[in-house]
Image 1 (spheres, one colour):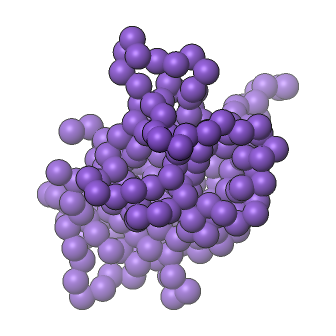
Image 2 (cartoon, rainbow, N blue to C red; image 1 turned 30 degrees about the vertical axis):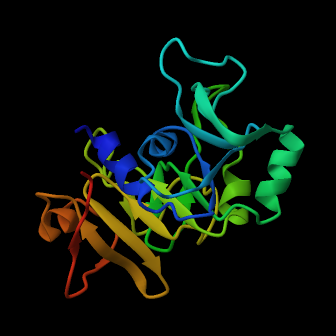
Image 3 (cartoon, rainbow, N blue to C red; image 1 turned 135 degrees about the vertical axis):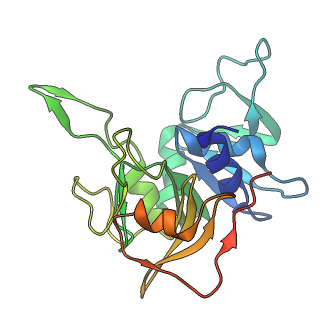
Length: 221
């Protein structure tokens, strides 16, 4: 099982009945493929889709129906397409119970940086998109990200160094190594992935972690 699948499967466990959930591009949209049996959620995409299902199989795509990442998706009974204004009214109006987003950096205070900065003269990476709206409009914010960069540097920091998308917005962080909860006392280590020790998580995390007496094992089967 690859890293992204581990994270997406664990993120899907946060879905609860009757939730309206927004999924960002990257690992978050993968979570739609792992919704647990018997859990009924309404998935919302900022491009104006409400009540969609897993990704479409090759050859069964509807070119007019895609998620925030532009990937073809399936529709569920009651699925509707709305304009972008209505989609953001849903988000800004506080009607999204949870959003799952990726991040470039996230810190122990719940601050998040998930949009790119200039990388050359007049050249920029991806824009902020709807992240700021989602981070302030959703009732719960879950971040899914690899624990470290390709260079092995921690993405879970004491303090973000990149321009922030939002301050103090993150509630839960899920990586391939651990699940961490942002609390008023600090960042609490809740779960470790199978085969991963608490010591390893601490070594690969720049942020200060609160270690409870019992740390559960992440379920990703």
